[in-house]
Length: 545
Ligand code: F6P
Image 1 (cartoon, rainbow, N blue to C red):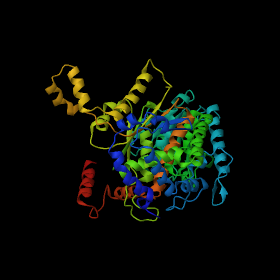
Image 2 (cartoon, protein in one colour):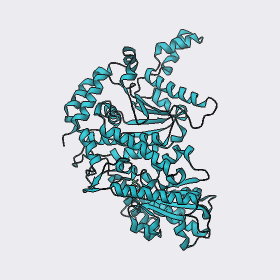
Image 3 (cartoon, protein in one colour):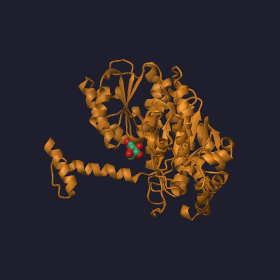
Image 4 (cartoon, rainbow, N blue to C red):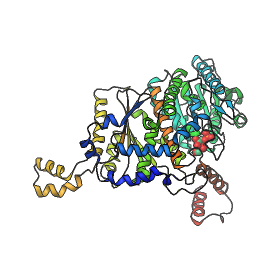
């Protein structure tokens, strides 16, 4: 492949950067009052304002040239065509098939996968209906009311965002809990107050080989037996979602209770599949399918819109602009919606597991930066914590601000205050406050000029911090689907331009193996093979037992 750094547009952008560096966001807005209309887009219910970026019309043109030269349109086509873009595992990445609500066939090895996707959705509907009607019930005949999602990574983070964000759409009388970590505290707290007769455990694991999930599933089953359940009752209280039907049946889950997944769906892109079964139970299948509709609308936008007006493309390019040309290391995702509190964590996995890569698709070391560090949290909470560093720290941290215009939970004038803060923070990031402004303000408050000048440097806010504002009317299932899909595609656009495979995760796989090896010697055995630090920590652990 041609290195992105060798592309003409890359070189042009590098040459263009000093012109932008010599100006500020404040100046750009002063020079051009029409930036909002020029640099914002709407798609699938989302309004995305990227006018507050260190960019002019010319910058955007060069960035779009980069996408064009890097063949992003070909990359999009390859994804939707089912080309094995996950080249190290020879698999397509077809999460778009899971939410393909059109008649369009999507083929893997020449075979349309849509019939099997639709069949699984139908099975999910039959099952969720049966749970709701009390036809699929607990071993003592009571309806199942508490669902426990046992899974980690993509079988946890994305699904949790869905159920949290769509809390207003839950069916009445249901509870949904999550168990992910191998830390016993997780399952202990999930099982606290649980009624075994009305609890359904859904073991979500694409591989059915993930240590944490298997151990937690075993612990849940042991808890179920301790509470009086018998082996024959497991079929009423445990279902699984996995590509590995054999391992799931060996665990003791009845074949009828296993929902399929396919190797052409990556774990971090799987919330749209039967991995979403626990969420579909509490939401109902109609709402779950509205989530798919929203994601499909974003997929169609991504698939059919020219690069210059394509939201995921623009967002991906802006990330590249800051990471590769301005040296930004991280990206903040600031959600002004309490129900999206775990969205940054989901994006962390989606983005960092996808684009945390050091070699190209051909296995050559990259000489350019790839995936950014993704972090963030909710506003306004973050304003009383890490926003200090955003306003007055030394680093360049581009941010995404996300907020619904209307709240599902209106309380007094809370939402207006939330929105005012959402905008206030962005204004501070855009304009900042100059030394002159600060000094004048302090003097108006009664300080002497000398005192004001002494304090002023501490109160100066440089501003000029680039950010995107994503807004929508209300956080509906459709909007949530579109929002998540927007970021999924942004990640792919960046991976494509960087020339890396966004769909494998060999680094994470290594962690799983290393943990196993240490476990073998934790209680006994020779520690000679281990470095001094590891060996001593193991001895400390042994002595604590
Ligand atoms: O952490 C690595 C990973 O493979 C993720 O990609 C995946 O989402 C997670 O483990 C869980 O895997 P599984 O669904 O196979 O249990």
